[in-house]
Image (cartoon, rainbow, N blue to C red; front, side, top):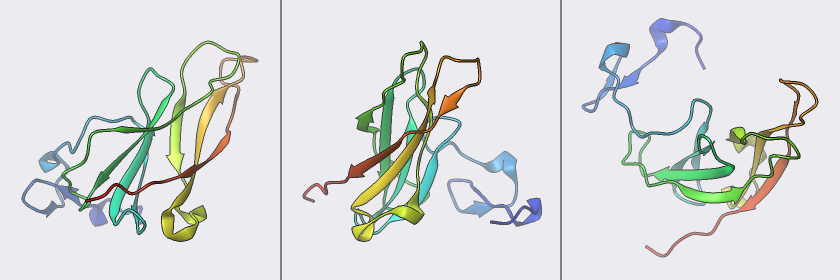
Length: 132
């Protein structure tokens, strides 16, 4: 991934643009998410924690530019003994097994010890393909 701003490209609806002002929103999600190609699903996938909930969700799309599916619940995260919600859920593509059929997801779980004290549980998820 390039850290040089000149290398970045943004989906404009008609193609990839170097101008951030032309970027289009693909879907309403969360500020932290993971996006990668999943061979098992034969699709791009995004994983994130639904805002203000304990739901960790998955969306898929045939192309990076969409169209993206509606969110589907992967699992309901345990936010521990503290008040609040789950956040920062991401899938780790490098650890996927069986061609992407099994993925691993981490998320922030508040410990309640201090305001920013969290732990990161790892959840193993087995994906199912739907008949087309």
